[in-house]
Image (cartoon, rainbow, N blue to C red):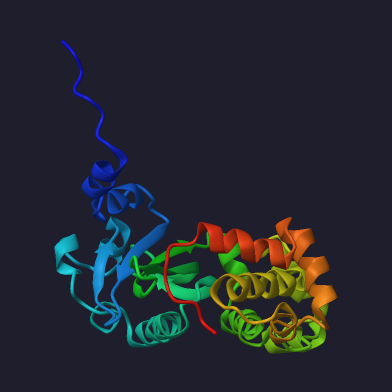
Length: 257
């Protein structure tokens, strides 16, 4: 019997215009929670692990509700702050250390990534979040002061961060702080700061038309030459080449000035 013709790409993409297959994919990942939210903070999708941790009877019970309705107050407040920043700036969140609940309602640490979802005009219309549990022994490496030190890097990466100051924030010796960073992120504190700076520079290059020298100063590099050197070493392209690549591969939409 002859097989029916394969659908065209446009037709196939229309058929896949749903979050159901993504939810189904993450339903089998027990140590991670996948969600999608709209700008009002309402859940549009949630993987099975999230449904179980919220103590809900079904996925449908999560749809349309907010973090404040489903998670403990302190957790919900932090999630809302992260989401508001993403919707305001359009910038992804990477490697955030957050408290979450395991299926038995016991609190633990997770590593959170959040990405903006844009429409065809380039406007941010939703966000996707993946929070992955930190298993032992990694989870044992994290406590509130250590998480605060890592968040300090993300908030102040453009400044002259010193290892001794970060270690003091974490309540650790410099050696202890460095060992924890290496065990958790597989990077030294200096390498991690560089990773955050390069990521911020890449986002600015892709999303704005500001001069590269200005972006260098805004992201913690002493000058454009330093950004050029480190960016090419990490990304494999110069900042100018990366900007051209990003422009050629991005969906149409407004760019920040």
